[in-house]
Length: 121
Ligand SMILES: [Cu+2]
Image 1 (cartoon, rainbow, N blue to C red):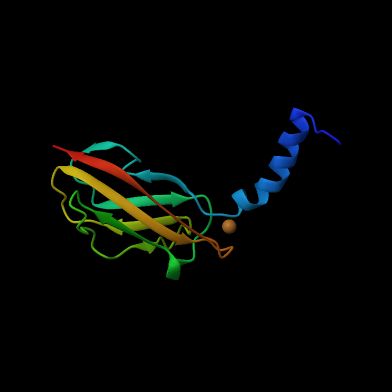
Image 2 (spheres, protein in one colour):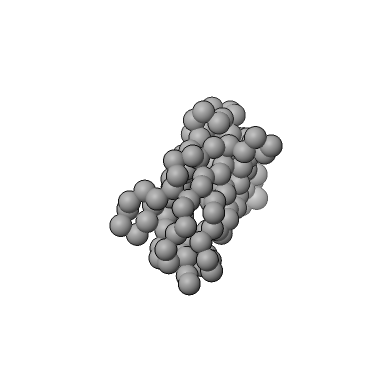
């Protein structure tokens, strides 16, 4: 039985996984940053992705600690940057918030996820 070396396996795995990984839209970074504490309420939550998004099928919500939705229901892909998803929020009280997102990248693959941030006085 033929046995691949450790490096051989690594190359095989990389070749198999790379196209799928590169083809999906994952969260690259956000403001407020993932897991961060921000002083003062942000006016918007911005999410940058690793791929261009399909505006009609990409959205995000901001939830308060109780799970109640607090964003202004205006999530949209930025007109000038197709990798940027923006949602507005009213002045947020201090506390923990969760951002949930679900996006369709231009290659037709759907991805979703969430992250938290804290607003501190
Ligand atoms: Cu994909």
